[in-house]
Image 1 (cartoon, rainbow, N blue to C red):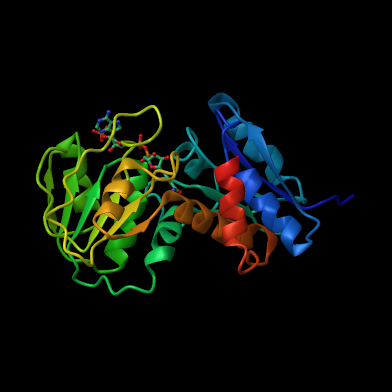
Image 2: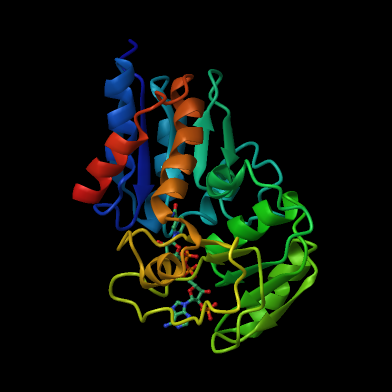
Length: 272
Ligand code: NAP
C-alpha cells in the first residue's frame, strides 16, 4: 500500500536542524501532499536505517548531516564523483526501483548567490579547511577563480585542499594580513555563536569586494558587520542554507521551490 511521499534529514544530534522548517514551508506553499521529517540516527544504526528506507516506496530520500556525511557514501549505489572531490555527501535520493543516488548540494548552494558574477581569474580568500570549505573550494574551482589564499589554523590540512581541487594559491595563518581579493569567504566555525570571533582587518579589500559568511547563527556575524561598515557587498549563511535545500527539494519532490517566497522563509528561519 502506498502512503504519503516523504523525505527527511538524518543526523546525531538532529533536533537543531532547520531543514524540516525549510522543506515544510515549501511543501505547504506549493500545496504538495508530501512530508519532510527529522530522524535521529546514531552511527551504529546508519546502515540498517538506510537499508530499511531503501525498501520503502514512499521514501524519496534524505538530507544527511553530522556525523554521517562520510559514512553514507558507502551505503548508496551511485555516489557519483563525490568521494574523490568534496568527500562528503549531504543528499541521498531514492529512485523508483529502490537504487540510491548520493550527491552534495552544498557546493551549488554556496555558489547560487554568486552565479551572476564573473569570478574567472579573480583572486579569492577562504577562511577554514573543514567540510564546508571543501564544498566552497569545489565550487570556486569550477568557477575558474584565480589565486586562492586559504587562512586556517591547521596549514597542512589547507594545503591538501588546494591540491585536491587543483587550485593555485597559498596557505596562511589566521593572523595574516588579507590580500586584496575580490571575494572573501568564511567557511570556518569562527564567529558562530559559542565559538571565538573571526577578527580580520578588512582594510586591504577593494571597494568592489564581496564578503560571504557561511555562518548563519548569528545571521549578522562580526565579519558581515565589519564588511557593512566598509560598505562592501555581503552574502550571509541563510542564502547557502536555502540554496542547498532548494536543490535537494527538487530531487525529492520533483518540483522546484516556489519563487518569490525567500524573504518570508528567511523571516521564519530567523525567528525559529
Ligand atoms: P568543520 O568541518 O568542523 O570545520 C571547522 C573549521 O573551522 C576548520 O577549518 C577549523 O580549523 C576551524 N576552526 C574551528 N574552531 C576553531 C578555532 N577555535 N580556532 C581556529 N579555527 C577554528 O565544520 P564545517 O562543517 O566546515 O562548518 C563550518 C561552519 O560553516 C559552521 O559554522 C557551519 O554552521 C557553517 N556551514 C554553513 C552552511 C550553510 O548552508 N550556510 C553549510 C555548511 C556549514 P582546523 O582546520 O584548524 O581545525
